[in-house]
Image (cartoon, rainbow, N blue to C red; front, top):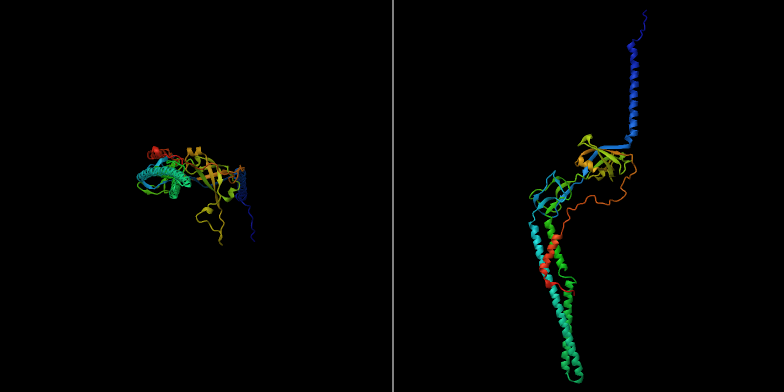
Amino acid sequence: MDVSVKTAPSPPARLLPDRRRRWLVALGAVIALIALVWLGWWLLYARLYESTDDAYVAGDMVNVMSQVSGTVVSIGADETDLVEAGQELVRLDATDARIALQDAEQQLARTVRQTRTVFATRDQLRAVADQRRADLARAQSDFNRRKNLAASGAVSGEELGHAQDALKAARDALIAAEKNLAASSALVGRTGVADNPDVRAAATQVERAWLALVRTSVHAPVTGYVARRTVQLGERISPGAPLIAIVPLGRLWLEANFREGQLRRMRIGQAASVVADLYGGHVTYHGRIAGLGMGTGSAFALLPAQNATGNWIKVVQRVPVRIELEPRELAAHPLRIGLSTVVTVDLRDTSGAQLAQTARQQPVLATRAFDIDRSEIRTRIEQIIGENIGESATPSTP
């Protein structure tokens, strides 16, 4: 009968479970340490900040348009060029505008002379009325004298009747003259030739024609860089057609799209740090939250999502947050519209509001490039009126 003999395990076999146990304990300790580090990082840092890489540079794109129609004869700037506010960008053919201005000036001269005629007619009618008034007084005197003499028989009844008829005719003539004078006075009113409505209307047409001539030169409304040029030499353009797009690089901001859950503690005025892909981590921009969007991106889409369907699936929405950057940092490291960035917002200061509490008092953008000094054309208008009015044409007040 065979008897089996149990052999003791070898020392290497006994060491394997102990080694596995030590590795598991070490692994558990490492995992616990990592969890503690992550918990500390979240408590001390991560929960106080929100970040997103769905952020892009935005800015104003000012479209330069013509206020009058015409043919392009000159283009003063091309894409990537720097332009100053008030600089001429496009010039149109001004031949038609000059002819229109000359026609308006001639019409003003004709109107002044016609108005002089109206004033002269009024003065003439006043003289006629004065003459008719004198004739009436003479006829009244003759009638009264004959009437007294008729009582004594020195004047016949026929002669008295003639005197009465003459008195009536003189009275009717005076009434007609006064009505003609009133009608003429109504045309001129209480103004002089230079202040007459017809003359002022003709002067306005001259000023309008002069403005059309000046506006054949199209100027830059802001200082910036030409981003796009769509106008071509010799092209016939109409008012309102975009010619050149200018981007003022000093007015760039960020549109950072945060998830719904990240907006709970975001407030206006909170600090933000920005890293642009253009410069990488070597350049960090600093800014602040200027405002939170009033809707998600899908709400303002051309075709908004319709969730009233049977196969609806919840999608986490994002809301754009506007972040203003420091102008000095933008000047030192210029950005471009549409560039990608990573934005981190510091949530520790929650004293601000989620929405603006006061209305803006100053305009967002303003330009004086379209302010035109009209003293030149007004001097010209006064000259035309003075040349055609004459010294004797200024009437007295009726």
